[in-house]
Length: 351
Ligand SMILES: Cc1ncc(COP(=O)(O)O)c(C=O)c1O
Image (cartoon, rainbow, N blue to C red; front, top):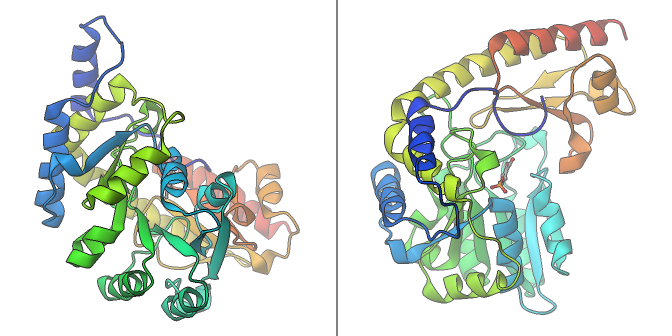
């Protein structure tokens, strides 16, 4: 119950589109189909009132390589990157991969997992070498949505200090309970010109293995710098990834609505069970299919090993710089979740 994909079959229209594509038996290098680019532009317009053009898009084989590419292209020699922890671990690795300094802002559960805006302002004022903010929006692993007013404050600091925002919005179609996602780039003209957005159908339609994601930059200079960062190292997108993404984003809204209802039910079930087990607790989960569970009360040295010994594979909090936590993926049939929770409960009680 660790890596962030789901145990659900993909929607029928995606399978249908892939089967159709297989009738054409050539799988050479392929440019992004115009029909896919149009679907992306229309999806962002209809869901977020975000007006972009196909010129603003770059298709990439994954968000993680694209984040690394962005740092390579956008950070000046000697420049720095900032992010708020706990966070999806490739955010912590990418700056180091590219030879940059990473500045960490720390979030705590006590303040309700808020992006630490004040600390960010102070850090940006004293570290003019910071070129890029890696923003996880919504947040993995803590499952929180960043409210538009907080987002506006983050953008203001970035504009003031000329920090480019790399806004990873890969989980933005997994907002639960009818919440609405606000893309960072839609906040203002300044936000649009200083943001690179990373999106994909991979999390919300369970397509991660097909290798297709999209980067949006409304500022042509930033898009050019991003593209330059990939020269010689970035692979082409998987041909079938284009097909699956287009089907997902144009034909599968009903499947997606049912998915969100099912995940919200799993989330409720998870929170009720976890908060009933002595030594464990979990706060609200507004987005993603990931539960962030505080296990400090158990007082075990290696929580991942403790639960693995009980037959449940979880992600260790330390991987995200969140010691004392584990991350549980509830994107699975409720029966599997129930089995995992039974094992977790039994192990905790026996301790
Ligand atoms: C915030 C975030 N970004 C990116 C990814 C992975 O993206 P990709 O598979 O497109 O590299 C994940 C996967 O868990 C994620 O949680």
